[in-house]
Image 1 (cartoon, rainbow over the protein chains, first blue to last red):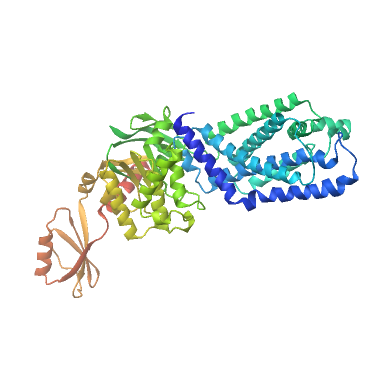
Image 2: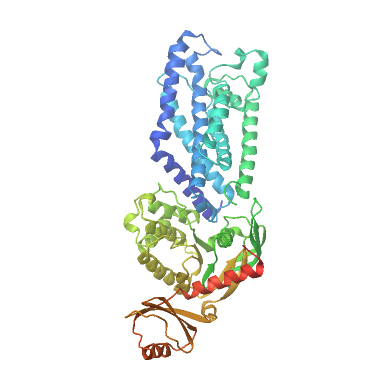
Length: 256
Length: 310
């Protein structure tokens, strides 16, 4: 990366980081509170009435899924809201008139999303330690899945923002697509509990692979072979990156 | 060397609207150039294409010899752009907006801070560097956009109606600032609806209408082409009818206001001598309209008749 590209990238990342840190009450605090409530209700109150799942207490079983759920929603929300606002307020033009290649702009926004995903993920992990005593089975797998998932959903958020024409458009996908996929992605249960036909349908849900790979990283158990999970995650990242870059280069939604 | 070369530039929007129909334009390095035209003529589209905010349909754009298609980043590095509408994040502090813009041009943070301070001081915004941009007045916001456009020291500054909506005092101080920028070597291209602004600042001018260049000339040459000058005279005492005068057409607008229409170059002393002889006492006088405004309206309407435009 040339010096000027590096400076532009750092500028964009710092700006994105400051943006969500400045409004931490809106961006960082709510997921911590929501996750604490999940642990209290599903983990401690209801979970104590359930037996073990995959050989773990229910509260321990849901920890990886809840952490990853907060990473997914926050990475996505950060990029979709930030880039859409930049479009809406037209300050995206500050970048378009500057000598920054499209891939640097995309990398800057995605890094901002990953930064928020990491901050929220670490906070939620901290909250989870009050309710469970989950350890780490594989640091490498955990960290890789954590970061790759954050990249994937930051890219998805960027694409949503490119096509969004109103503030409604940036909440439709998270509400009607992302949330159902996450809740049905094995956060709260093992797919082995489902009937055969629903197990097969669940395999079409990409979130399932991420949640299971992350669960393997923390607990050492997974419904999906690890290599398939990584293949799916990396495949989606490459696909979404290429699409997002194409949109940005063409100026879809931002140039007339 | 040309600061800007445009050849056969065309733009048709997705809805079928043909905004530019083959524009050719040259702006020399160091020029102070006005691009004028009525609303919807294609000024902002042209500027949008030069600044990479609008995709062109056909044609070629070169900035200081760099081709926009082949070397877009070199082109962008040469240009500072001040848009018509505010396009900064209103919640960001003023200083950060300028520093970040420098960062986008690859200027490292310490140097970006120094340059931002220089620009903000020049434009009298340094005291407001910590304020959110939304708290600035309209004139300050305009100046912020100029500071932001100058922080990377562009060779070509493009201003799209930079003084729209600002009061006359601030407008005049911005004119002085822009004149100094130009004297220091920056080529300036300006679009404006204040034709007095273009007449006061610019050395060369192009009038764009219906997506075509209707006129391109040096300002002094353009103004010389005006054949007639209209002067309004305020009279000391009311008249019943305008007196006849040789070489001047006089018309009474109201009992104490007289309009004098004469060929450009007509000696004003003859006019006043004639009025004195007719015992008409004048207390004040002014131009009926800005000279360039008159020419602009002539050219635009002529172009519409010839081209069958709206």
